[in-house]
Length: 226
Length: 397
Ligand SMILES: Nc1ncnc2c1ncn2[C@@H]1O[C@H](COP(=O)(O)OP(=O)(O)OP(=O)(O)O)[C@@H](O)[C@H]1O
Ligand SMILES: [Mg+2]
Image 1 (spheres, rainbow over the protein chains, first blue to last red):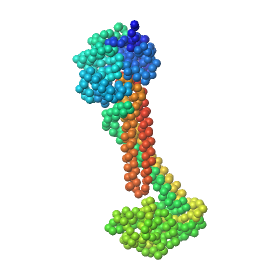
Image 2: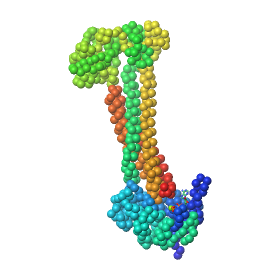
Image 3: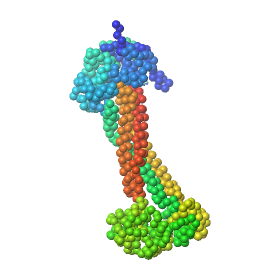
C-alpha cells in the first residue's frame, strides 16, 4: 500500500515583486514529506529555505503550483482555514525563539491551545507535561527575559508540541545557540522523531543537517540534490 | 474563553506600563475637557433660559447708554435715566405698569463682618406692585416695603445674604449697616435661584437716592398689557424717549430691550462661548484619540513578530483582532471612565465657584460615552490593522 505524504509540493513557485524587479525565491519545487521522516533542508543564505518552510507550514501560499496536505489541496483555502490547519497539524520552531515576552514559559506553551479553545485547566496541565518533557519543569513561571537561549528554544519546542501536531518545522533552530547547546536541541528533535513525529529542519550547516535521515539540498530556489 | 483574550491584552497593556498610563492620561484629559466644558456650556444656556423665563416675556427693560454692553452700560455712560423717563414710559400706550430701580455696590456690615454687596433702591410708591409681582422678590419672612417706608432705614435681604453670606443667619428685626448707616431688616426674600436676586439688599428708593446722592435709575422695567406684542410697545417707548431726550433715531443714549431681545443677545454671546468650549473639547478629544492610535500603532509595529508567531501557532485573524481590540479599548475605557468622573467633578467645581447654577445633570456625560464608542471604533480598526498583517512578513522582521 502506498503511503500518503503529509505534505506534497508540486512545481511550487514563489515570486516576489519588488517594483519592476521580480525575485524568484522558489523555482519549481517538487517535494514529498512522509509521516515519520526526519528531513533537513540545506542551502546557502537566500536559497529559499525559509520560503519553502513557510509553504510547507501553510503559513504562505505559492505563486504557482500545488500544495497538498494529507492529500488535500490547500491552495484554495482562506487565511482562517489555513490558521486552523497550522494550529492543529503543524508546530513551528524559529531561530529567534519568538516567545511572547509578556507571558511566562508555561503560558507560552499553552498559547497554541488557547486558539484551539482548550479549557484552561487542561491547557496548563498539558503545558506542564510538555515543559517536563523538554527538561524545564523548574522554569514554568519564568518570563522569556529571564531564560537562556537554550532554555528559550526548549520552551519554543514545547510550544510547538502543544496541540500534538504531526509535523514539526524548525527554521535554523540552533542558529542563535552555541554548538553545545545546539547539539542538545538537535537531540530533542531526534527524540521527537523517534517518538513518531515528522520533523523538518532548515539549516545552512551540513553538520546540523547530518542529524536528519534525509537531506534536501536547495540552491537558487531549486532542489539540486536529495 | 473571552477571558483568555482579556488576559493577553492586559499583559500587553501592563508590559508597557508607562506608555499605557501616558496614553490613558491623554484620553482622560480629553474626556474630562469634553464632559466639563459641555456641561458648563449647557448649564449656562439653561440658567439663562431659566432667568429669562422667570422675568417673563411681557417685560421690557430700559437702561441708559447705547445698550451694546447690556445692563452695565448704565455705569459707563454719562446719559442717565430719571423720573421724567419713567413717567414717559409709564404713560406709553400698552404699558400696564413699571418701576425704576437704582443699583449701587455698597459696604454692608453685619456683626463684625463687612461685605461689598449690590444694594437696590426699590420703589415704595405704587410702582412697587411691579416689583412685588416678580417671582424673584417674593418674601419668605417679614414684609415688602410700604408707602410709609419711604424715608426709613429699612431693608429687605436676598435669600443668600440672609442665610449664608455673613456666616450666620440674619433675621427680620436684626440690624445691618449700609455705608455705616444703620438699617433694620423688615423682610427676607424667598430663594430666587439667580445670583442677582439672591445676593441683593433692597432699601427704599428715596433712601438710596439720598445715600448715593443721585436721582437716576439704573434700570426702568415695564410690563406690557395682555395681548399686546412687547416688540411693538418697546418701539413706542423708544420713539417717545427719543422725543423726550431729543436724540435722533440710531443715536439713542438709552436702550429698550424686550425679554426676547435679551435672550437673543445673551444667546449670541453664549454661542461664541459654546463654540470656543466645544472646539477646545473636540481638540483635546482628538488628541486623546490620536494618542491611542499612536500608542497602538507603535505597539503593533513593535510586535510584528508576536503577531506573526501568534498566527503561525494557529491564531485566526479574529483572534489577533480581538486581542488588539481589547488592548486598545482598555486604554480608551480606563481613560474614558476616569475622564468622565473628572469632567463631572470639574463641572461641579465650576458650579460651586461661579454662583450661576449649572444644572450639571448626568445626561451631559453622553459626550463621554460617545467618546467611549469612538474609542471602541478606533480599537476595532487598530485590531483590524493588526489582524490583517501577513504572518510571513511579520516573521521576517
Ligand atoms: N518579502 C520578500 N520580498 C522580496 N524578496 C523576498 C521576500 N522574502 C524573501 N525574498 C527573497 O527570496 C529569496 C529566498 O529567501 P529565503 O528567506 O527563503 O532564504 P533562506 O534560504 O531562508 O535564507 P537565509 O538562510 O538567509 O534565511 C531571497 O533572495 C530573498 O531575498
Ligand atoms: Mg531563512
